[in-house]
Structure formats: C-alpha cells, structure tokens
Amino acid sequence: MTPFQTNLLYLFVAGLVAGGLGYGIRRFFPGIEKADAAPWAATLSYVSTAFGVVVGFSILFLFGQFAAARSAVGDEATSIGTAFEEAKLFPAASEGIQGALICYGRSVSEFDWPSMRNDGVGAPQVDQTFSDLVASLGQGDTATTGALNSAAATNMASQVGSISTARETRLVAAETSVPTMLWLLLFVGAAFVVALIFMVTHSAAPLTQSLLLGASAIFTAVLILLVVSLSRPYSGGGGAVTPRLIEETTTFMEASAPQLAAQPCPAPTAD
Image (cartoon, rainbow, N blue to C red; front, side, top):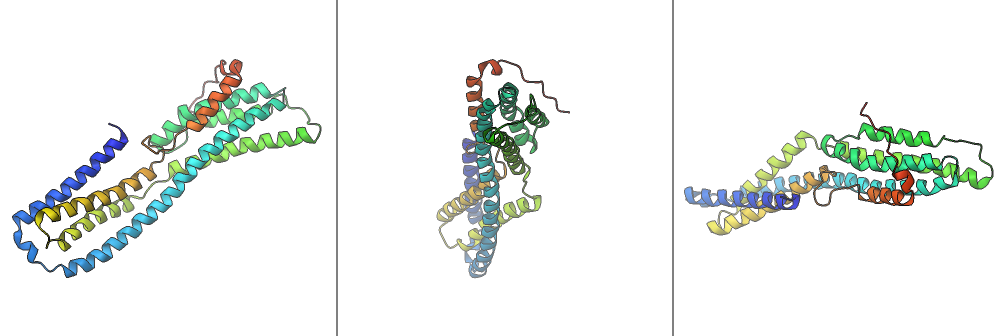
C-alpha cells in the first residue's frame, strides 16, 4: 500500500468512526437532542479557534523547515556539479577532486537519506566522504599564478563550503521534531472539536448529523496528517524530499568521467 493510499484509509476510518459513533449515540440516547446547544456552541467557538491557531503555527513552522530542506538539496546538487566542472582548471588535482565528488554524491543517497529518514541524523559515512573531498583539494597543491587561477581556487573552496552548508540545512530539517505535548494537544484537540460539533448539531436528523460529523472528522484528520507529513520530510511518501537532484548530478559526473566512476570509492566506515 502506497503512502497516499494509507492516508486515504486513515481519512476513511476517521470519517466512518466519527459518523458511526454519532449515529449510534443518537439511536441509543434519543433524549440528547433536547439539550441546549448554545453553551456548547460558545465552547466550540473557543476550542476550534485555539485548535486552528495551534495547527496553523505548526504547519507554518514545519513547512519552513520542509521548504529549506528541499531548497538545500538543489543547492547541494548545484555546488557538486559546479565543483566538478571547476576541478578541470586544476590538472594536478582534478582526478582526485572529481573522484571525491563522485564518491560523495553516491554516499549521500546511499547512506544519508536512510539515516535521516530512520534516525533523524546524518550518516557518519557521508562525514567521511566529505572529509575525503576536502582533503582532495590539497592534492598536488601548487602556488596559483594569475588572477584567474586565484579566483578559481577561491571559488572551488567556496563550492565545497556550500556543499557542507546545504547538507547541514538538510540535517537540521531531519533533526526537527514535534514535542510530545504538541502531538497530545493536536490529537486531543481534534477529538474535542469533533465532539463539540456533535453537541451543536444534535437538532439535525441522525443521518444528517452523522454525515456532518464524518466530514468534520475527515477535515480535521487532513490537518493532522499534514502536520505529520511536514514533520517527516524524508519519510519517502508522496511529496517527500528526495536526493533525486543529487543522484542526477552524480550520474552526470559518472558519465563525464567514466574512468573515475569505474574506480571503487574508499570503503566508508561508521566509526
């Protein structure tokens, strides 16, 4: 079952349970329709407003992290590709730099993404391949001559620094977690809102009220599922942040330097 199908199932169950409970209560407690709805309506107004504010701020905060992570993947891929091309300006070190970039690109999708998805942290193996990349900049190091070579060396170092910055942005998004108290507030608040909607709609026919409750529960569940999705940007579901751009850049580098791509990368360790 795909994540999208799973979410649809959650929504269906939420609507069915809420509507079914509402209909059952009306059938077994018919006298409830005589209750005064005014106090419940005032309470619903307050609770739904507070719940909406909490959900809204949660979505805004998490979406900022999600958008930053998605943008960082593009920045990282661009910096990797740019550094690969600029390495050609340094014949003595180009093979070492390009080989290190290929290994780094491979390790990101192979190690970093599973680690961020499952543990919320970066992979030590990628730390090692990045260290190898930095070390490759000093291979065959000679004094630069001329403004062009000096500027190219500076820009090369800048691109490698941008790779590190983009990765750190990814890791910050992976490490961001929703506090347990906030999850409790969201789920309890959602249930309370639906219960209050039941109390203010008891004047409707049982079937009509059941449909209203089901629709309200589905809408509330959509909001919670959105918070869940944004809190797990690397979960692998639809719309999740993926290493696709980095993988495409790695494929391009491998095609541009097949002799380097054929060489095995240093075996990364988790130490």
